[in-house]
Length: 110
Image 1 (cartoon, rainbow, N blue to C red):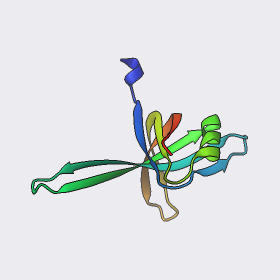
Image 2 (image 1 turned 120 degrees about the vertical axis):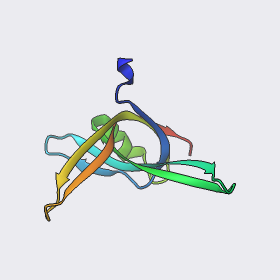
Image 3 (image 1 turned 30 degrees about the horizontal axis):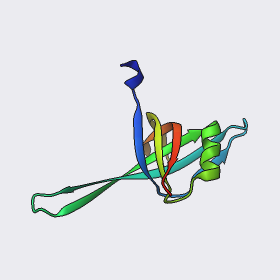
């Protein structure tokens, strides 16, 4: 069961081209979002589409793959772990971010 701790697997479509950051250390960082969709029928029998957006961060070789091959709309499978962090804006407001640190990336479909 230890392998199941903090493990996330998603299949979705990229909402934008990856944002690439080259750090001074030479490490590469890729940030992108993917959308996952689900549908169900509500009490009135109408089909309702529910789309959730997920922030993804990838480091190193995985970031290089994202930079070279991922484009907006591409379907991907992501495996990683859920991360929570916070920061303070210039105005002093505290902001919270939930993102997935990508360990594995698989390109699917078109």
